[in-house]
Length: 566
Image (cartoon, rainbow, N blue to C red; front, side, top):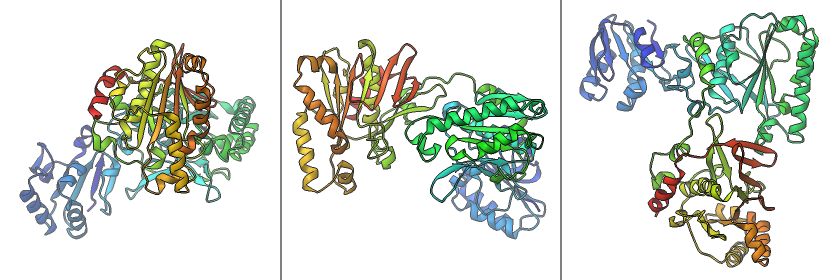
């Protein structure tokens, strides 16, 4: 007897659940059409039901586990019981519902029906902020005949060390559409864009071509492929010039130069492979590691590293292929401060100040981009720890600088305890840009040169090269963020401070001292910048310039958070 798993939200799974007097359900709430329903919290009755099924129950009986994750959380032994039932009880059936493919139990023989493409990707609903979290590694597109997920590997290691993009071939129309919609659903246009190429205007990309990821949709290309071939080769050259000498496009992204993967999706490849376009695609394929241009073609070919197996796509693929791409154009709402930092709407000391991996230390979100995705500032040194610092600046008119400073400093305070981060404020003009922040327990009044000498002596005595070696040895020396507003006026009135500033700017990455300078015009010491322009706030790192929206409630958080942390 075939056992079944239905994956999707309740409004899709409920109509597919078998009904009748032989159906025995474990699940919350009531359900029509079942013989009896047991709440998963009712341990005694639930265990009796499972024991009855383990002994064989009655021929034709069905055990329904309605919302596997919820039921499994109430009974850690549920998976073992169901494995026994499916293996030993020959004349009964097991039906499981789950909201996500990842919720299903391991090693239970099930015929899986994925009813919802969002559930395939672990999503209950689509919002840009929630959904566009994907990394460019792999994406599920459906299930095979055994109910196992079919996952497309988007990258591979060409030489065992350097990650590079894979070229893909898929022959099934549904599989290709599921792959494209899955990528659009889980990756923002900042990370992934597509050019759709249809040799004969077959309508394969209908609906999907409305997504914001699509640069162009070329129809009936077989009539005249030469112009598109020239355009794609020019785009490849442009990208190779931007990436320059970095090993791969993925290393290029590590320096915060945003260059999205560009998927060239070709329908009717057999009609094009002998043309100028086919030759251009072969040339582009050789440079995938650097250009970030990958091929998705509808026929097996030597340029394709990966041949995607046929699979059963989610049942509502065509419905959501019409709805989701249009939904993706809706503006993302601006987040509040705690939502941006993925925390409850309050300060939770153990959660906020818990240790984080080195890569995430001193890296915090300051706002969101146009797609609702976090824009981060990492004050770590780009030479020592792949950060964006060690020094930064906020450039804005007097009346706007406070909000940029608050977004950055409050985020650092929220994520790091006073043992990990200390802050010094210098308000030269006295216009109150640091008002409210001084109540935080991180704030110190220190002599900057004395602090520098102390750090130099501490590292020298332990024979440490820099503060990160010191920290790796388990020793405590907090990073020091030195926030100076009105820095140009300060240097004009006290020119002797220029030498102090130069000392901190030069040696800060070694000793954990970070300058955050703010004024109406840029300074000479910053490696990252928050700048207010006519178009709003931007984050600048080298050649990378990104617009962002700051949290909507910074004034309220400035009044409440520093006191709460104390």
